Amino acid sequence: MFASIAVLAEAAGEAAHEASKAGLPQLNPDTFVHQLFWLVVTFLVLLFVMSRIALPRVGEVIEERAERIQRDIDSAGRLKAETDKALADYEKALADARANASGIAKQTREKLAAETDAEKARADANIATKLTDAETRIAATKTKALTAVNDIAAETARAVIAKLVGQDVSLDDVKKVLQPTAGK
Amino acid sequence: MAAEGAGQHGPMSQFEIKKIIDLRLFDYDVSFTNASLFMVLALGVICGFMIYAMRGRSLVPTRIQSVAEMLYEFIAKMVRENLGKDGMTYFPWVFTIFIFILVLNLLGMIPGSFTVTSHIIVTFALAAMVWLVATGIGFAKHGFGYLKLFVPEGVPLILLPVIVPIELISYFIRPISHSVRLFANMMAGHTMLKVFAGFAVMLPVWGKVAPVGFMVAFTGLEFVVGILQAFIFTVLTCIYLNDAVNMHH
View 1 (cartoon, rainbow over the protein chains, first blue to last red):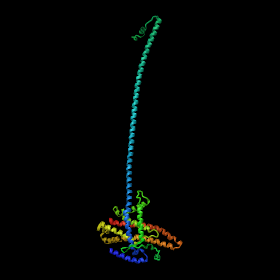
View 2: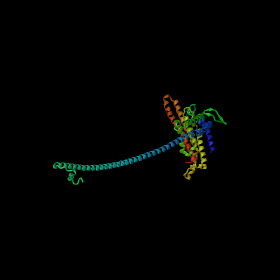
View 3: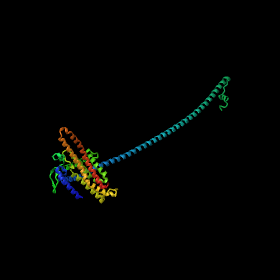
View 4: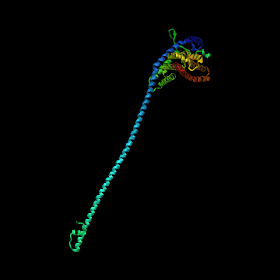
């Protein structure tokens, strides 16, 4: 197989040698050796530089960037979760505070109502006492006044008797007459 | 072509190899020529570019660093798609082939320069290297099982006497088609440019517009061809390598 290729190449080379005289520089086999030599040298150097120095550097940078982006996405996700949690906490706290506030308001309302009721009851009681007092006082005054009327009546009666009869009668007697039940 | 081919400034003169320094090694002629000069130049340009571009190794790439990274990612993606994850072992080699051919093609676009890839011996050597490496990997990985590559699955037994020789021929023709594709594209394009440049020189002033306009358009096309051929050569390298590594048909 390789032998046949070599033969073919040789034949082609010979044909090319003829052709090169006619002006196709690509087919001039005299140039093949140094072209191949420099191709091999430059290609191997290039392969070495690319695979050992240049490409690993590019690969590193690209990988590092991909890692960095992944890290950033991860941390963004984490931060978002934290934010969501904080928001939920805040809303919970708000709801709690609201429930608390309405509880306090209700309590205050009840307390105030109770106080008012108590105050009202006290006031009522006070008024009742005062009323009774006043009634007692009125009754006393009335009795006193009635007694005074009796006394005056007795005095008057005595004076009248003294004028009419000319006889001085004791006050107690007059009273006995005017009021048989009183003075006893 | 015949009319001006023989002259010093014919369309083919750009492919002539001129010795710069005469060198001999073990009785072989290893002279430093204009072709060698451009190979060394490409080597310098590539190494200089890759190392200069990555000097910062910054996480947020500079413009030049992102160019180097794009080249890397482009070939890495190609290798991964064709060869799978394990194929990344061969990535530096494939990348070297790609960038070497690409830069040689592009350097050849500089007026007055020399296009190394327009020489069949260079492209053939590269294609032969690919073929030999692929075949070597194939036998190293699968032993004689690699020969099953020439016996496609699901083919009726009666067709095998026809199919196997066809597969064998197509396998052995690979380095030739692989190398001639690149060589012929580069040579034909550059010859065309030179031919039309010749027209532009020969024609009177009022007639120069057409060939010059053509040359402007064709120069753009040649850049595309140069990049595309480097890409195609690399893709085929990956495909041949995939046959050897994974034996997918």
